Length: 158
Image (tube, rainbow, N blue to C red; front, side):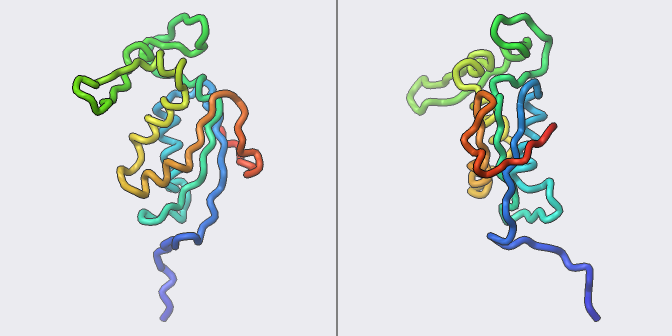
């Protein structure tokens, strides 16, 4: 008797990853990061296997136009400026004595806007070697252009 109810387990190199492009203009950082983390892990596919990287490549454009929750506030340069951008702190330790540094989201979005999305997605990924490998498939760019047009990415609307 043949058992037709077999569980599918993907093998390494068996699945071909796709390239997806997401426009972050006006999207909330946390919701965007949760969706990106799902795609990078491959949980959006029926062929998801926990011990194999089945995720896709993700290209994020217009990362400087993301928004946070909170009350909208007037700002001369950022169209989606909110009160949470002044309260949200990104903290890291430099490794030197007294080297605890923090920067607000409002300052970080001006200096390095791609770091906001990268940090949010990184904190939603597995804290393992495979999680770091999956995070390397995330490409983030300020502005509407990117150098991955040869991969012919599919545009995803969230």
